[in-house]
Amino acid sequence: MIKGNTFILILVTTMFVSCKFYGSDDTNKKNTSLNGDTREIDNIGSVILEQDGNKKGDTTASKVALDQVTEHANSELMLNDDPDSSISKYNQENTTGKLTEEDMDKLKAFFVKTITYQGILNSIYNKYTRSYNTIATYSGCANYNSIGCFSEGPSARRSQALNDLEKNKLDEEYTKLNQMLKETTQDYCPKALDNAIEEYKRAITIAKEAEDKIKKITSFTIDEGNNNEERKENVDNLKKVNNILSISEKTIETASVAYANAFAVIVSRLSSAEFITAVNEFKDATEKYANGNKGDHAVDVVVGAIAGIAFDNENRFERAKMFANKEKGAEVDKMIAAIEKLRATYTAVKPKNKDK
Image (cartoon, rainbow, N blue to C red; front, side, top):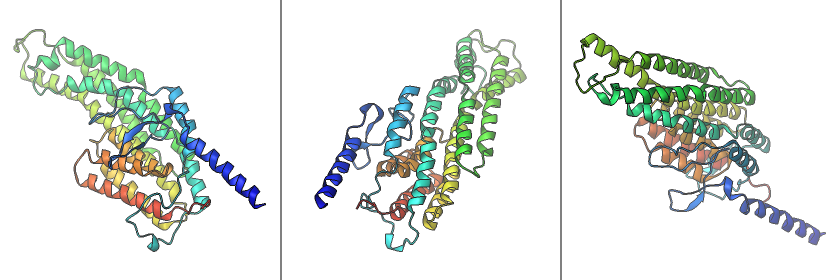
């Protein structure tokens, strides 16, 4: 009997190791963590895009790649539940409210149903980034005497960028994400993201109308019979075009915060008061952090930190803090502290590995 049990244990262990170490290379990305080690830090349901110092790359994740990663990530969710896998500064002896196996099942159900959320946000960013950069390049002029903004060439490029934004129908992608959260999370309030989506749609319409009203400079001379009022009107219309930039950033921030809000609703029904508190503080920090100038970094900071729980992976928390540190401010400091508390608390309250 003992030999039989030993054989079964060896067989199960072999199967687990095979699953962990022989996964498809196409669905993983290697990156260097802050401590210098190279480890897997792929995102929820997404193909991690190559990072430069500021923004993500310009490659749109294909549906096939996304499906591959989703399948792989489903097998990885919350498997790494060894309580000794990391050392927390949080005093585990003072933590009375452990998460139960039922709690863990509820968390896993949420992550499985929303596994493509971050990948879709990354895809949205990649779809708007080219238009964003074009508009940013040709809409920053404060005076009408600049051919860099008001001549035929820049105007044509802005018009094309706005048309591309409209054709991409990113509002529909955001609506799908909001619907995903509504279907997954009872009591989730979709209003904030709904409002952001409507504002985004209006901003595109306003920007296109404003662009059509801008009078183009046809020569290097600045005196083309325009009075001061007409020049001001042209500059004001250019500002309306430029406004789509901040609206785009705010919308992706709002979608990131929406994920944190839905996650907090799920956690509110769990057994651990400590974990509920840490998640609520994290949620509150995300709302202050996403103040309109973080843009796509909010995806890595907010959704990425929650991925640390989904995959029970320290590197995801470190990555979230790394992206948060790209900005400065009190809201950034609070965000980083909230991420660390979320990590430490989860490490302390997650159940012991039942195979140990």
